[in-house]
Image (cartoon, rainbow, N blue to C red; front, side):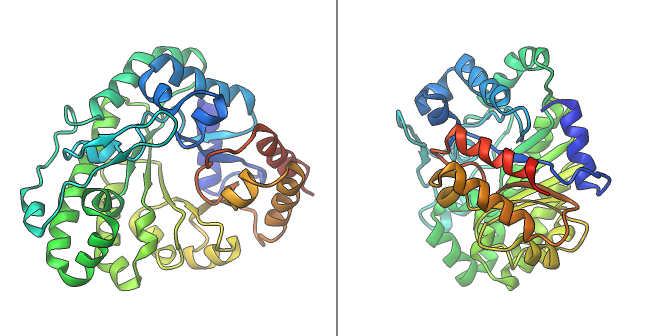
Length: 344
């Protein structure tokens, strides 16, 4: 993002902005390759194609702040690869990581990754190092360290059902696993900051937080996310959870969250009530059923309705309830922008 976009984002998050029409969307490999008419594999394997695709989105939608901005990633394989997970790749679909934990004993044997050289992490960093001069030529800078969250990574390593059962049946072992993963995340975001001193924010994505109840939020989620968002002194702690978000919302400030991207299932007014007045919200048009599957007219009307139903427009960035999904056409994003700009 540009420095001016960063300052505008910071003003909204801190409640200093008088602009009630801020727009922002999380974009990455689920949307960008298909929208740009290229294969997912080309997007991941060609630095030149990756750069041109991100620039194309920025140039096509100048009114939108895309977050985190030039996200160097390899889908859900990114973080698990550092733990030794086998990555499975497809020409036109998202990759996935094979499990590495098949028994409780495997948790004890799980290595603590070296974030400077393990898995796909060096390729992510090197891509940005190689392309940072061209990114800067376009007036943009790297502002966010980005990572999947501790529960999210844990489920990739051992399976979602297996991890949730571990929380319930063997909480001590779950703490061991989450401590290893959280330590990894702390190292990983610090290393990103070390490589790119322009970074001033942390984006953490963890939908599995929406799968656990309040008791587990208190015991497992709050301590882990507090460590992650406190890994270095940042100006924006940005948390994405587009699964069930009502149980975690009251704990956002305690966890170090300044900006929350949540599911479309929850009205903005409800999340505001639970999160309190100091957490900025980004959302929350239905991403698949409206933004992707609707007509431009339906997107326009639904966006205006979303805005009208929010009682207070301060500390809000208008977006969808999650990242931009596959198959969102240009016309629908343009309709979203038009609806926000024309709202009275």
